[in-house]
Image 1 (cartoon, rainbow, N blue to C red):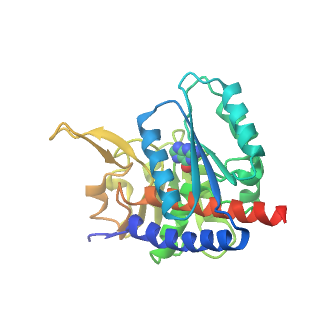
Image 2: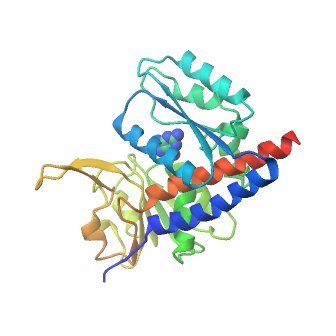
Amino acid sequence: MTAKIIDGKAIAAEFNAETRELAFRVAGEFYRQPGLAVVLVGDDPASQVYVRNKIRTSAETGIRSELHRLPATATTAEVLELVARLNADPAVDGILVQSPPPPQVDEAEVIRAIDPDKDVDCFSERNVGRLLIGHDSGFRPCTPWGVMELLRRSGCDPAGKHAVVVGRSNIVGKPMAALLMQKAAGANATVTVVHSGTVEPERYARQADILIAAIGRPNFVTGNWIKPGAVVIDVGINRVVDPDTGRSRLTGDVNFDEAVEIASAITPVPGGVGPMTVAVLMRNAVTAAMLHLRMCR
Ligand code: GUN
C-alpha cells in the first residue's frame, strides 16, 4: 500500500482564505486590521525562518504584523518590559514570543506576563486550563489545532479511534492529547501518550489508528511502529545534513520512506503540519481582534 499524502500546504491555503475573509470583515466593521506583535529574542536560525513565515502569512491574511527583535543578550526583565508595552497597546490584538528564547530568559515568566486575551499561542495558564475542560477561549493551540484541521479536512474522523501521541511537550503533545480526547465533534478519540519514560513505545504506537509524532528527533518513528492502514501525522521539523549531497535539508520525526508503504495517509515534511501551525496562529490573531474590539465597544 502507498499512503495518500495529506497536503498541508493546500489545506493551509484553504484555511488562510477563510481567515482572510474574517480579517476583512473585522476591518470593515471596526475600521482597523487585526494586529499581531511577534517577538523574537536572539538569532536562532530556525526561529528566524519561522518568524519570517509568520510575518509573511500575516500580510497574506489581512493581518497587520509588527516584529520586535531583542538581542541574544536580552534579560527576562527586558522581555517583560516589551510584553507590558504590547499588552497596553490597543492596536496590538495578539502577542507571540517565539520559542525557545535564549537560556537566560525565563520563558514561563514571559508566558505568564502575556495578557491571556492576547495569547494567540494559547500557552497561558488560563487558556490551557480552558482547553482542558472544554471551555472555548477562542484561542486554539496552533500546532495541535492544525493537526485536528488536517485530520478533519482530509476525511479522518478521530471518533472511536485509538490515537497515539508520541511526545509530551507543552506546545504539542499535551494539548494534542487534550484536543483528541474532547467530547466534541471532530474529536472523541481514545488517546495514549508515549514519551521518553515509556518502556517500548513502539508497542503502543503499533496499536494506533492515528499516530502523531512530536518528539523532535529525526526519523525516530520507523516502519515497524506503524499499524498497516494507520493515519500518520508528522509534527517534527528537524534540520539534518544529507549524507549523499552534504547539503542540509528538513526531515520529520517519522521515517517517511518506510511509513509511506504502510500507512493509509501521511503528512510530508516540509509541507504537512508546518503550514497549518502558522495558519491557526493567523486565525487566533483574528479571534483576538474580535474579542478585543467587541470588548472596547
Ligand atoms: N516555537 C515552535 N513552535 C512555536 C509556536 O507554536 N509558538 C511559539 N511562540 N514558538 C514556537
